[in-house]
Length: 126
Image: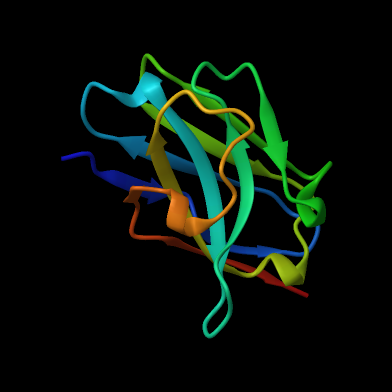
């Protein structure tokens, strides 16, 4: 079955940058709508950014607009999240999620997604 593995999390100072990567197993990556979520302990998991199956369209949650960029490479089965101008409030665990279907606009709720990565920690310090 499809598996997702995130990487690239770490510790940066406010204003810094990180690049998260998600690698997806299997041969069906190009048919998946992909979304990055984030969830702090005890809080709701919320969507951050989504990308269409062919990369032609993207969407972003309001708090990250203008700072984060989602992209994908279907030849490499990867989706990335470039995070610039990071703020302390961006500190949390980030998850990569996939749902089969060339869907747009993308689903925004975690319950709509079938496959999940293990999460990667992002910490932004002052």
